[in-house]
Length: 330
Image 1 (cartoon, rainbow, N blue to C red):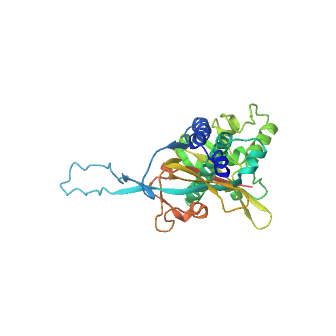
Image 2: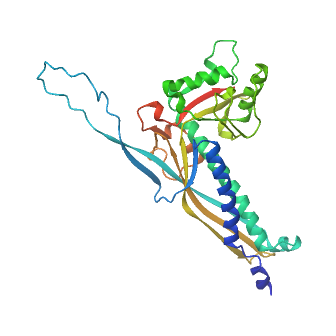
Image 3: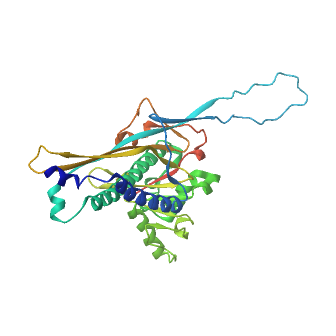
């Protein structure tokens, strides 16, 4: 009898995936559109620990003056290749344990539990996508000095918080390619610093939605707001630095690269029968113009390794072919 009752609480994988897929698809469609595909989430099956794509490097001095009076041998230009390298990150869901008696007491059935568990895990998976992508973006661009603007470099007495001037100074690091920056990624504290300045400057049209459309205060670029811990850093006991990213198209791509597997089982060795649920999945992370250092960073890196600047090397020669710009403010 006990075994029969326990089977009533076996997780329904189809319902689990229905709940999870529904949430992920809804969020991904909105996210990709709102970020103008600067942070792209997509399903794409990939084998191995890395994704490696070769490309031809830019040939320096490809066009030059021709001397019509010379018969000297022409200088040969070398054609070389490099590669963009993304890295796969393996993840798990759970294991979550619960006594079957707990579900019975609240009148829940296995179908309801499966659907709700699927939705909860979907949100946790999406949060991990975002946090890891943010860590990689900040680390990779922080390692490229020409793409970093620090408000601490402003003259003594100037405010070090985010202002329209600081935003413009950071955007200027992309030079004549500044139009390639299509979205901002920032902490809510930084965003509201801009809102308060806009109010003081009597600039109209500031929105307070999580993702706002382009307004004068952000130079007509949408803002992706997330309070990810990877957008702030504490040095010493009180000083806090905030990181704001200006992103180009497909600055970061997250590929759902392995089919998710969810399994459930029963533990009959405890006083109360317990249900155990566990899942495995993986995704690939790639940054525009960058390559993951397979030697220093290695396969299936930790969160700390993903957020280490020296683990991301520039594959592109031109800084304007990289993920974007980084602004550091207080």
